[in-house]
Length: 452
Image (cartoon, rainbow, N blue to C red; front, side, top):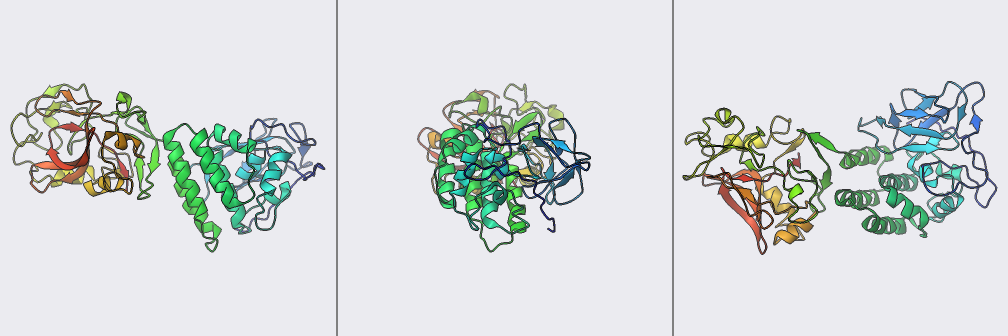
């Protein structure tokens, strides 16, 4: 990356020189801050760099509404004429991964916007707290922190920037950290932020992802080129984005055991579980290997004729009932060993029941996150406390379509057919037990999707 930084920084003579970036925090800018009325750039407008990696195709405006033009590389944006601060950046994508950039950055002076300068927010006290971290090179002034850390290969500033990106994801976390950050090293800052995440962030999925992302930043090896780890971290930032699928909005959650990414709730659920008997988190009840054709809805009507193919075209989206063994929803001779339906639920192209890039996990993958994890799940309470937040949604009975055991028991389907040729594997959770077993394919049970 061959971009040369241009810094238009006014020095404030109060302890530590500063002209800060305004990120919308609660603190009062230090005396001498440029505020919203100062302009710069003369007859030609300034070039501004959007830095978290580099951000392209964002909307960058000054306080008067003038919009900058993205120059094509290096996160550079050019204004046609002098600007009025503060500058505000929204939207955009990362230049190297094309993944969305999802925090806002503003700046009250200078030519760089980054998570670091946004966090400083024009406040000398906050700047002093960052200076106390004693990072390599001993940055102390605003100019020292307002640099292109990727271009200069400054690992310490890069780690700090990624940590403050996470902090910017939650206003409570930002407020808490800016008010109380009395630490004197980067390692201490990791612990401080992790503690603040646990106490300030109320969304459990976001909380989990933040903790894991902070650990990923902490684990960065200083010998790895920043351009390489930046790309890796930006891919991890996809965890903070939502997925809209078949009319529902899902978050993503990363496993603390396997580092695999899962949807944060069951297919069809309105929200992440708030208790093991939270009925808004139950979701849909799928017959094993079947498409999302409407049968999975808890109140879908029943149909007593078995399907003649795995598409169940004759059922018109109804829940197929069967009161005789082997209690399957397809007729005998249609996919008896389950291989067709196993393949169907393993698709990742969006043509099956899971979003693009996701699939139904096999039984070993389910077990690795629950009953075989280092903090093994042994009952329904622990299933709820697990990072997957599995609620006890009960199941839909295959011979009648009725809902049973809601709030006390549940089974989550896997994509794995059983060796017997008549059942399929699932993971069950009750008040005093949890485990893997083979279950009738015609029963309606929950599905949680795994990123491939």
